[in-house]
Length: 183
Image 1 (cartoon, rainbow, N blue to C red):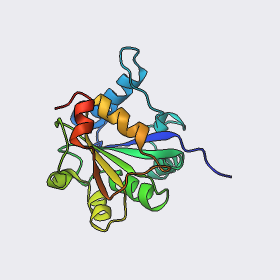
Image 2 (image 1 turned 90 degrees about the vertical axis):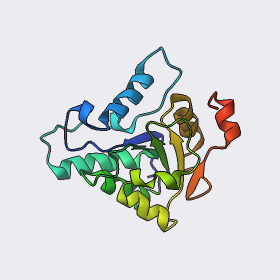
Image 3 (image 1 turned 30 degrees about the vertical axis):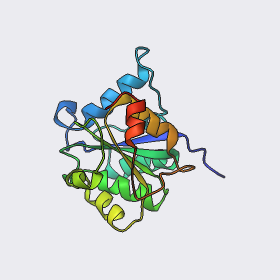
């Protein structure tokens, strides 16, 4: 039976902590806030809300099982690329591997701290090792964008397993940024 893939799978480096201020979890929290608040014109179907939650004390096999179920129902992955994302810790590289090799999910790479992304390869120091591997081998389709609400929503609306980015490394044009108020 075919799976209805409509979720956005958000991946980030949790840095081995449950304290969101000490990891990229804070960016995921901001995405959830935008999504749940009536103050923002922003919405996405969060894949992490579609399965049973896991506890910090859960076994790794239980956690992986839940993450695979979420990936299976996702139309793309939103990968938060910060100064922490290339640190090889936790399951981030495993999530990228499964997204690419098992579910053929395009990845929306979202960089914190930038207004525009024009040369993503200059930011490759933020790439987790598996993202770098798949990009270097041309085995993935990605769009690289800044962590800006309007740009994230545009990428979520535009790219999915049904309409992936055209290239291994795709960016939005200057005209696109101008249209969305970013000069």
